[in-house]
Every structure is written in structure tokens, then in C-alpha cells.
Image (cartoon, rainbow, N blue to C red; front, side):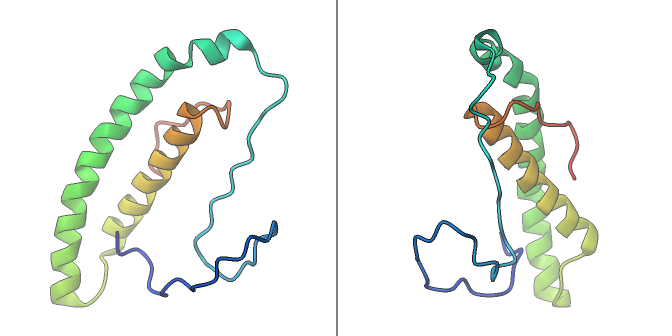
Length: 113
């Protein structure tokens, strides 16, 4: 989505530790213990509101990405508000996916931040 400038390195080492050389990093620690079976079983119902919200944010992000493409084309830089919205929408999508895939038990917030 054109949100980072450095080209990713061609290093595919299988080390268990993060090399901390890349500015883009996602840390998800699965919560595997002390799970309530009822909450896991009803999660497919509870995810509906945040999934709908995430869907509409993703549609808005597509339009913002198109507008930002032309803004970058003509001005040479991302408008800060558009960039913050795109990063927030990608974070929201990651949080909803982690919740839906049962990696975390915390319900994702209805916020783009």
C-alpha cells in the first residue's frame, strides 16, 4: 500500500528472534491458556459488528489509497492525514483477523489508531 520506503531485504533466516532491522513488525502472542470454551464458540457471532465496521473502513481505505496515489504523484509526498488513516485501517484489519483466528481474546476496538 506504498506505506514504507525501504525495500525489504532478501534475508529469509528462520531465527526465532526478531533481527530488529525492519521498521515494519507485527507481534502477536497467542493466548492459548485459560480459554473459556463458550466465548470461543460464540466468537463467530461477536465478530460480526467489528467485521462490518472493518469492511466499511477497508472500502474507505481503497478510495483513500487512490486519492493518495494521485497526491503522491503530483506533490511527491503522502498527505499526513491520509497516511495515518491508511496505517490505522491496516492495523484494524490485523486486529480483527487476529481476533477472528482465535489468536487473541481481546475484542478489537472500534477505532482507527
